[in-house]
Length: 104
Image 1 (cartoon, helix red, strand yellow):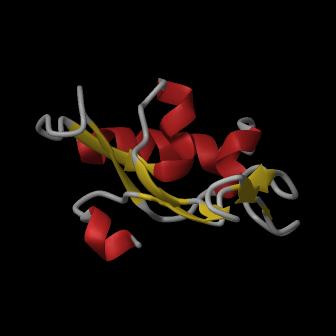
Image 2 (cartoon, helix red, strand yellow):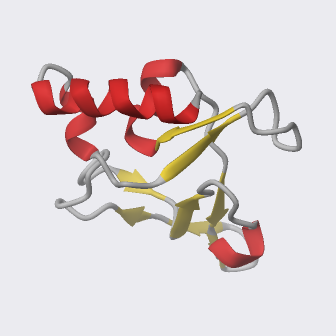
């Protein structure tokens, strides 16, 4: 399944008809029913929203002043997704096979 879908996605990307795929990362994204569920398929990360795939990641927030204030970061203008938007201080999506401890 993974290889068949990868071929179709690569063709769609080459066509230029789906702008979301302009953010192609060459990063495998697991498709599964839940966090601990078995992986059913691995797709390109940029295509996840096209399939409604739940993405998992690690997020670090900066609480200061005894938790009364929160540091908020702004994404770089050059990011592939949501450039210039507000974000967590540190965050990263969990790629296929990656453990949370490896991500942070």
